[in-house]
Amino acid sequence: MSLRLAINGYGRIGRCFLRALHESPFRERYRVVAINEPADLASIAYLTRFDSTHGRFPGQVATTADGLLIDGEALTVTHAENPEAVDWAAMNLDVVVECSGRYGRRIELERFLKAGAPRVLLSHPGHSAEDVDATVVYGINHDALSGSERIVSNASCTTNAAVPVLAVLDEAFGLDHALLTTLHSAMNDQPLIDGYHHTDLRRTRSAMQSIIPVSTGLARGIERLLPQLAGRISAKAIRVPTHNVSALDIALTVRREVSVDSINGVLREAATTRFPGLLAWSEDPHASIDFNHDPHSAIVDASQTRASGNRLFSVLLWFDNEWGFASRMVDTLHHWQARRRAGAGTRIP
Ligand SMILES: NC(=O)c1ccc[n+]([C@@H]2O[C@H](COP(=O)([O-])OP(=O)(O)OC[C@H]3O[C@@H](n4cnc5c(N)ncnc54)[C@H](OP(=O)(O)O)[C@@H]3O)[C@@H](O)[C@H]2O)c1
Image 1: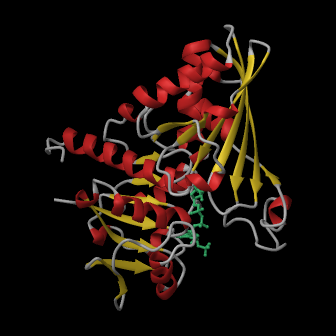
Image 2: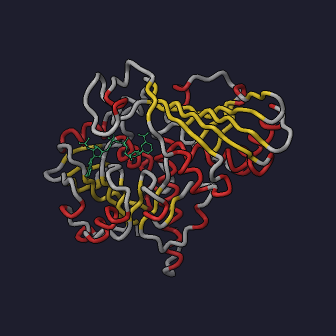
């Protein structure tokens, strides 16, 4: 029997999640039965069918009186702006996949549970580690899920890219300090031309005209996953005028002597043996667009590893901030629910 899902917030990540699930090998085991998104039904159907970044939806999409029909399967669509306005209980759901980005504190997330959603998978980090039952970077700590959690965060796209690489470099060389700079594609919280933003003056500026530094919680997010590095990580984020695929430049100091070759050897080994499907390795002369629709959490660009002396070096990662992250949401969901069903004595599909 397939598990029943609802998506709350059907923007870039909500739509990518639906599609990543549709294209995944777990497709038959999950059914998205509802979407809650303030936009009108015609726009929701249209943006499901056509996507400027990922291309046409690989299936049939039609509308019904109260929802969508995707490859013949009906999804109810509601347009509420708060969790209490949706009758989640009546949908007999297993998980609400929260992709609006509007709820980060436990008290806010529990509104879904009180309104009848049994569990919530978040597309962003909780406001603090304690605001969720678990923060997962798939490949690093998904095995710690017991199945009994009610609110799970899939961390951020950048945390998913950075943590596997930092973990293996720390194990191999002993990280002293790290400075991370994300070059992140534009997002829907930036205007196309200058316009007002409620909390961040720099986000008032045209996304397509400037390179724009923005605030980031990346260092805190990494420390949640790798507490041994607490106090030794710092990060900044810069939005750049591309539509998708981001880069992460990580500068590190280490306790053992290193060379470009030894660093690349460790990362290549990690991509091939420890994190296949999550971390990839590339020696080709790439530009970011080459990784559009790439499902990896990160791709190491081998040609861009640099060393200054023998304890300071930097590595460059690429990641599809939409598709890579949505693919990890599918992985985390599947592992979490397999654990839950195993705990409940149900055969793991
Ligand atoms: N885009 C990425 O690369 C990326 C990667 C990883 C994680 N994330 C995280 O995922 C979250 C969503 O990001 P996104 O890029 O998908 O943003 P987005 O494109 O703006 O999508 C969010 C959608 O949720 C809708 N929404 C707003 N308030 C809602 C509510 N109360 N209930 C239900 N739906 C609501 C929005 O409608 P309106 O437009 O009308 O407000 C919008 O359609 C954020 O937390 C973000 O940090 C994003």
